[in-house]
Length: 301
Image 1 (cartoon, rainbow, N blue to C red):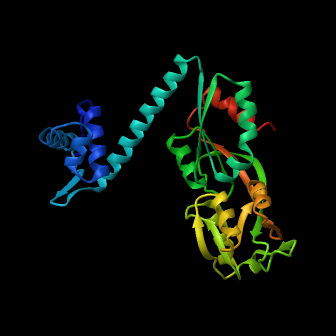
Image 2: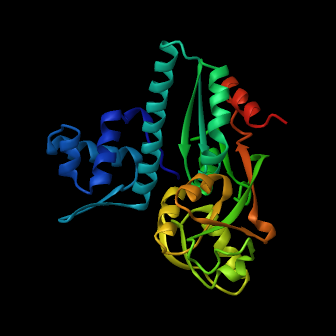
Image 3: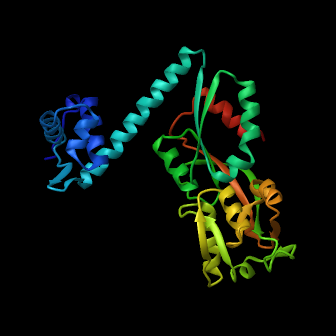
């Protein structure tokens, strides 16, 4: 028989305590963070585990570690508090006369190249709407839409988006960026296979752009020789300017930096270098009127 637990026995003090203990790995530190006596904190945690019917923490002399059930509980607690913070923020907006709140998650390419002008025009026309914009990796954006953490996402079209409604957005050209002294600098065009002879500067793991180029390299029977990996296009340009390797970037996102740093832009002959971006949302979660207005602004066609 499946064991049930009583949600009414949970309180926010206990949930915050559990999060603090899980993140610090110590009941003592968690109790201090929540301004509770150690004995009271221990009792709350024991009662919480009893209420859930599961062991959430493994206790030892070195501290505490989460069990598999504890990891699941932590994820839900963090989402709960994130929702509460959003609830407070949106209510605060209403009290200040702002009537709408939209959570827009976007990848780096769309955020640097396309969204600034679109959002400028949208917010000028809709002063009573707040857009909560977050830069995230394309894969994380798709998961956030499924989980309800984002209303609308702008991401790479090649990202798995099962269950989401997907609308074409823009196409951006990927180019090779290199130092003026690099052997490829004198070329106007080059195929990606030729580029694989050289060291690369790239984004960190998890980037859809890195995944795309790595996948293409594997199809060529080679691998990318990553010399440096960084977190942004600007940092990539700086590393390329230092002569640490070549990089594959969206032309619109790197044009100004390339000019300022006197880097050479070489167009790629490969068809995949014309990369598609998409807008996605979860049809199982009804969009608010404000989110629908933003969606219309993003997809004028």
